[in-house]
Length: 193
Image 1 (cartoon, one colour):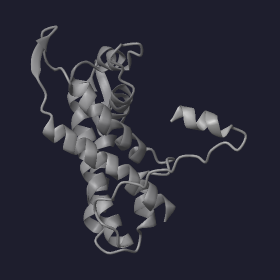
Image 2 (image 1 turned 180 degrees about the vertical axis):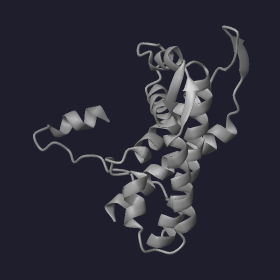
Image 3 (image 1 turned 135 degrees about the vertical axis):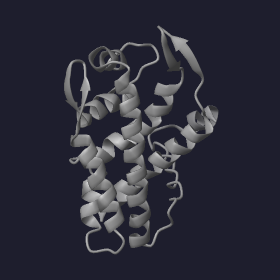
């Protein structure tokens, strides 16, 4: 059950990122001879982090652990089919950089580049991605990220039905402030307020 709850909390971030991407269309311009979306990496950064967690089989919020935890519940056939289709596409290869490259590798590099994207360009993961695979990797990575997000949302809806929870989880309760330090003088607390 803990895997399902972790997956559901992660899926909240996927939903929010998809909503943000739908509300914020990109501004297309030309850069270095290519059509470039100026805010592409910032938009995908929000989506890449939870998708990256869901695709990592060792993460507590992984898709495979949540799917396994839901084994025996009704309505998983469509989701399993979509997951297997995504896995088959990730295992297929595409010709980039003079050789055949598994799409899973491109997606992994894309998610790393988007998740660790730095506007100050201290970490050049995106530049390394483009240098290694070319601009086509950007399109392939974005497409596969959105496909993975769709499958994650489908499983989240099934998990919500299985747990009897609402599809869109309410925000978690705020953590209360810590109690006052017993060694601190009362007048210091009063002056701080």
